[in-house]
Every structure is written in structure tokens, then in C-alpha cells.
Length: 240
Image (cartoon, rainbow, N blue to C red; front, side, top):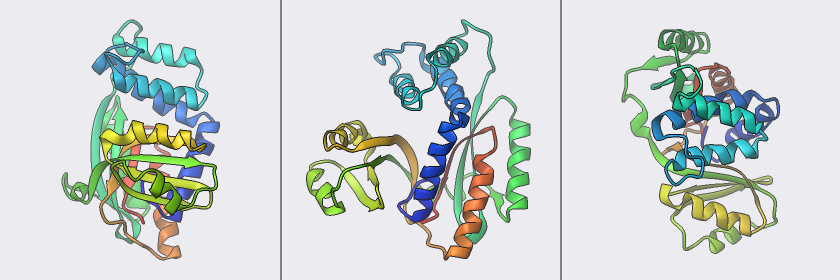
């Protein structure tokens, strides 16, 4: 989930905990399999840069290399595997937040049934295609920690890049940028001595929705329930 509020920070910290428990492995393996199926198994990145990015991500979360290799071989058909398909669903959650849900599944009917159950139980509702995606745009999102630079310092050092927004909450720096600038900004941030924990292309809300603590907690509980589903690959909201 993207945004620069305390809710975004809570989600980021939870994602790190999930990675430590190995939950992130399953989702990443599925994505590697699909990337290899669609673009080939070239791990050097010249033929399949998406796969190269995913391999780097696998290293960052300490996923065993053997897991990565098996996922690639399943994607290229050299090992038997599951045929995952991508779907995008849209809806509303508690407090009226807009939600985009990227699903990667071998069983669409099961995935939709589980989605509907969570939406219904948590006070949200699935919507028609196109109902909320106009509220979002594709952007590069970088999250980094460390260093003593202020938001103004960071903005000054990154002034020459196509950056939409920089914010810092506690030790977490969040940067939203144009997609083509993502890798260059990531490397620039590293050179400043910060540790990049996340650098991805995401759906970012054009106008984040601010909720009070009570509604915000309900919205977060709803998003966490969705994120816990095995078929959910990525989840974005306009919770601000």
C-alpha cells in the first residue's frame, strides 16, 4: 500500500516482518515464475529486466537461490509447475477508501470467492472495473532507512531527478518518482548512505484520503485481511 502516512509506515514494517517469516517467499516465487514464462529465463537481465529485478529482490530478502532457480525453470517449462494468471480487482473499504487488488492465481473462482468474503466481512465492497483505478497512477516508490538527512536535505540532493514527493517519518524515507527515474534515484539514495528497503513500480493514489484513528484502524484491519490471502500479489489503497 502506498502513501506517506503512519498507515504506510505500519504496512512497510509489517511487510518486513512477513519477509522475515518467509511469507514473502511464496508471493515472490509466483511472480518470478510468471516473469520467466512471459519474458524468458535470462537471469542477466538483458533479455528480461523484470526477472533481473525480481532476482535482486529475492537476494534482498534472503530467499534461497534454489527457490529462485526452481521458479524460473517452472516458468520456462523446464520443470512442471502451476499456470498462474494475473487479474486486477477494484473496490471500496471501511471509511470509503479506494482499493486496487492485484491477484496472481491458478484458480480465479477461488480467488474471487475469498476476495468477496473479506470485503463483505470487513465492511467493504467489490466494484466494477474502472470504478477506482482512475484515482491512481503508476509511479516509482522508494523506501529507505538510515542517515540524518532531513526532507529538505534530500530534496536538495535529488533536485535534478523527476521526483513527485519526498517525506520522512521517524527513520523511514519515502520517495515517489516518475517510473523511468526509479533505478537512478535508488542508486543516488544508496550513495547518500541510506539503506534501500523497497524500490518498485506501484499504483500510487493521486489524492490520499485522510481518516481519523478509529476509521484508519478499521481500514488497516481490512487491508491486512486482504493481504493475508494467498492469491493477493499486490495491494494498493488511497489511505492517506
